[in-house]
Image 1 (tube, rainbow, N blue to C red):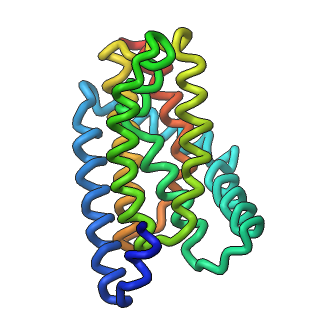
Image 2 (image 1 turned 60 degrees about the horizontal axis):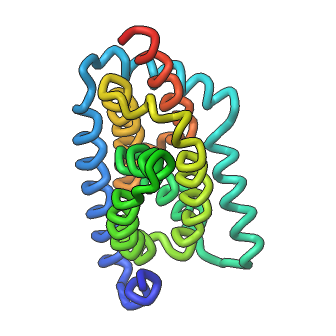
Length: 209
């Protein structure tokens, strides 16, 4: 649907839609970031996680995966990789992903995931209208990430403790802010390299809270 809509847009309309996406992403990110009880946890998580991600070259790995998918489907879209990486991160980082997946894994109640899929569905239409066909392949990332959390739901139920979940959400929120800056053309941030910060946030919360 997004591709059909986007094909009717002029370059100016695509640009304004991209700016709308960027501003909306900033709003979502800041709202999540304010969940923290102690900003030092978020700062420490991003700093340590960013170093780990840089050493592991997580961002390059995501981009390489995007390029691989682009070659496989023989796409000529100039925004294929951007659409894939951006939508993958936005759809996988957030409270509904963690809470919904673990709740589904523990009790079989997927109601939160159903609500999230509806929201992601509408968001994907908007993303695809500006970023192209790469967005649809974020479904693979969602399947692997959310599916993994669901399968490990019983072992990861501790993540639902408020003192841990809040710091996890806040750290993820600032990562999403980085995506917003990128979409607005303010600064190219290697957002993928900050993904290990989510695991670091959990460890710090367990150790100190």
